[in-house]
Amino acid sequence: MVNYIWLGLILIGIVVAGINGKIEVVSAAAFEGAKTGVTVCFGLISILAFWLGMMKIAEDSGLLKKLQRLLSPIARFLFPDVPRDHPAMGYILSNMSANMLGLGNAATPMGIKAMQELQKLSPDPRTATPAMCTLLALNTSSITLIPTTIIAIRLNYESTNAVEIVGTTLFATFVSTGVAILFDKYYRYRTRRTRTKG
Image (cartoon, rainbow, N blue to C red):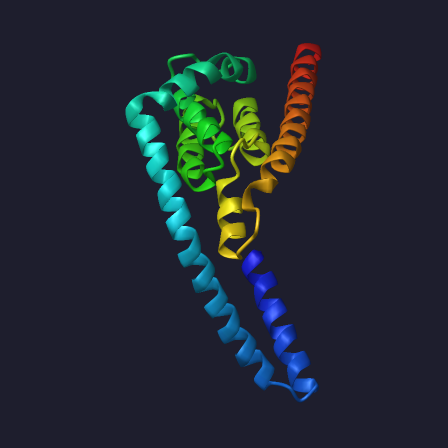
């Protein structure tokens, strides 16, 4: 679907430029956009490599495991139907830790592995379990202590104070995560009640 939307936007742009007699603007904008994309990517590589290196150091030093142990009671509260020693719980904790450190690129593979493990606990492979819905809601709205990707983008565009976004991001993600958990618990309660009545 997204590919069709992008194709539509591109075709509309070309047609409008052609009608206005400014078709040369299309190729100029395409080259400029490609150049900007490459520049931004190279700027992000250095910052992401730095933070992924820090993540590796945190993992080797045991800091990540301590953070995961700290998050374990929260994970058990949020995922009561996932066995404590199940591999899914480890991936969920890794996903939560990476998201809290603002490492979305590192969190995504952990989230995918967690989903695959949660799928194995599902009685119906075609239907998402409550735990899978919870993981999706948390992964989307996760509390971010250090928004490394945003800081990297701001540094790339020569922001005078790239880290001033930390407080705002922390507040926004705290609210979004709180709302996500509230809705998740509400729908879990409603589902249990419906099944009990049924």
